[in-house]
Image (tube, rainbow, N blue to C red):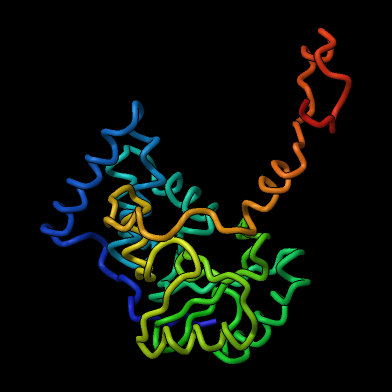
Amino acid sequence: MEHRTDTPAVHATSYDPDVRARLADEAAQIIARYPNPRSALLPILHLVQSEDGYVSPRGVAFAAATLDLTPAQVSAVSTFYTQYKRHPNGTYTVGVCVTALCAVMGGDAIWDEVAAHLGIGHEGTTEDGLITLERLECNAACDYAPVVMVNWEFFDNQTPQSTLALVDDLRAGTQVTPTRGADSVATFTEVSHVLAGFPDGRGDEGGLAGAPTLRGTVLAKENRWAPPPLPDERRRGKASGPGQKES
């Protein structure tokens, strides 16, 4: 499938001097966080992705030269993790969770409707370059199933209709508000820069954990449930077994 995006494929083999100087400065800040420079590879891959919209060949070359690695070593890492893209990505990555719970709660139906609506499949990008669509295997938000993510911001309890409206708003330039977390959705390159370790000042946006997430804790307090005793506590006879209520 051809991937078209507003971040076109980079054909240059290196960065312009001013861009390279800026990236080198930020890479130095990243490397300073680690005792071993090569440990900085993951955030530096996010850094070059924030510049090019994906891990481009020149991004691989930059990371390799900066960390004294081979391009093959850098490429091996960048192809292992799904957050790194090896072709131009859309402005917004829309991920539909299709793992078991989300799937049975409607995730499969959401995927089918949105893929047909956009005319693309897994890792496909719309011709306007705005949306890349992904099937995601668990967003770790089963308490809000089915879940859709846009650049890793949560949109909970979705339906096919709400998700169609979401992608249409993204393509129309209408601001969308995640269910939890940040007050708005940043672009793919902006998020990549944050993942490289450079905060965008929005870390305190959004509320605390919601009621579905805290339900187990609430039930435990209401029923005075205690955790099972540790093995050494059993040996000392401090508790008779798991599932015992607090005294």
